Amino acid sequence: MLDAGSDEGRQAAAHFRAKGRLTELEAGQVLIPGLVDLHVHAPQWPQLGQRLDLPLEQWLQRYTFPLEARYADLDFAAEVYPVLVDALLAQGTTTAVYYATIHVEASVLLAQTCLAKGQRALVGRVAMDHPAECPDWYRDASAEAGVADTRRFIAAVQALPGAETGLVRPAITPRFIPACTDALLKGLGELAAETGCHVQTHVSESDWEHDHVLARCGASDAASLDAVGLLTRRSVLAHGVFLSGPDLDLLAARGAGVAHCPLSNVYFSDAVLPVRKVFAHEVNIGLGTDISGGANASMLNSARHAVIASRTLESGVDPDLPRAARRREGARITAAEAFWLATAGGGIVLDTAIGLFKPGYAFDAVVIDPSRGLHMAPEDGPEALLEKLIYLGGQANIAAVWVAGRRVR
Ligand code: GUN
Ligand code: FE
Image: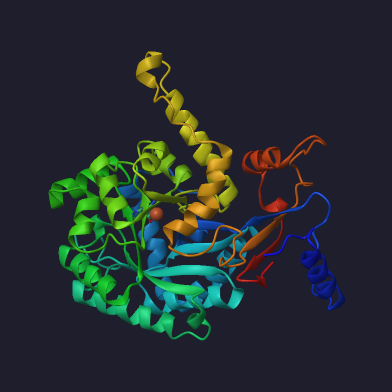
């Protein structure tokens, strides 16, 4: 990276201008690191913005498993996935961590779509085999079949033309402990050790989910995943609202990270993730949208909700409780911290050099145009712009997008 004001910088600019290869920002525009969405359910795209009237365990059975089962049809996947990837790039999401479905071919198609469109991605073929929690028309036939299909998916993604750059990588994806038998979890843990692939799952998301795992496993989600080798430096754990202090210490020791999805938590989690507590335990953390549990595809919106949720946690919500009983002092995070979570924090969780402009980091970048609705005043400096971007920003402000140096929007 060069300082544009230095002699070297001016020379480089002149050189690339002469070659017609210089992109110059318009007055008022700024360049930010690309947004990193740590948690997206790609197949749930068709139900974004609806069907949030049921608790998690009923929502899965009533709406979500039937929708995901439709991706057995590759034509349906081919209709949805390109639209989704385009939509996220338009929102400035340069990296997305996707759950697909149990179907190997459709899941590979999602990875192929990301490669074709130039989005950095981790893609997971979902593993789920527990007969008590998964319908017989949407589950792995056995633990062995779930591991074998995951293995086949990893090999297929790694063999895609273009995948050798590491732009798109496979992730081992046990849906969540309730949906997986012990044998499947163990097999996937062994596969993680063997392949070194990223792992993604849901952790301590809601009262029901957290209590279900305690009752079945006699231990928390975090301890249960650790026991089978699924807590690694490359594990991305969605939600984590009910992670205890010892759970967080375990995550920190393993280098596993949390994907905070504040909007989804409103509907499914029964509580707000105390982000400050996660910071205090020095656990890696970034942000996700949790499409479609979170009814918004924008990571700027997710950052906004992270701020709002933290303020709500600090103040408490029930006015009939006394102030002291209602409050959690010092829970708030700032807009700047939420922006960090949406960029650099996500990069750290993924153990990937993205989310910062720094030598050695990929050029994943977004041009922000504040002229559309950020109401900039002449005296507004970079801090005001950042705050307004988080509180007011959206797709209209995303003027251009690069991933790994390639212009993709
Ligand atoms: N837990 C297991 N599956 C899901 C899902 O699809 N969305 C959310 N939010 N939580 C889950
Ligand atoms: Fe989720």
